[in-house]
Image (cartoon, rainbow, N blue to C red; front, side, top):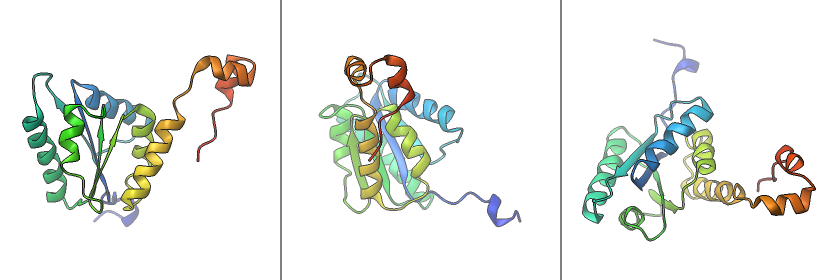
Length: 162
């Protein structure tokens, strides 16, 4: 039996990204490269552009069931666009204690979750941290120039996070 320190702890929260096209898959792959982690507790649900809510419900339910079968009973679903089919379907699974949904997924959010989601079982706090990270990562270049004086300075000093 391997030493206890070499055994990966079971993640407490499963992260499911859902989108039309391959966006969900590409975000997970990019986060794996950036974090250097396999992000085994992440799963992407990529809907074909012709698939509707019924197919989305089936695929999201299957992803949640796979993780529940593996012993992970909390999930954070990240949808690409508020109000679109993937988000509407994911909303059907929201349960305050077990499943939360965030729409408007972006890469900084996925990377943050890649670093934190296996370390906590506090779903509401994790959702809040991910949402703040996503919002804080959105910047308008010209406003940074106005505040900082140059693009180089703006790039050298990232905005502080809450």
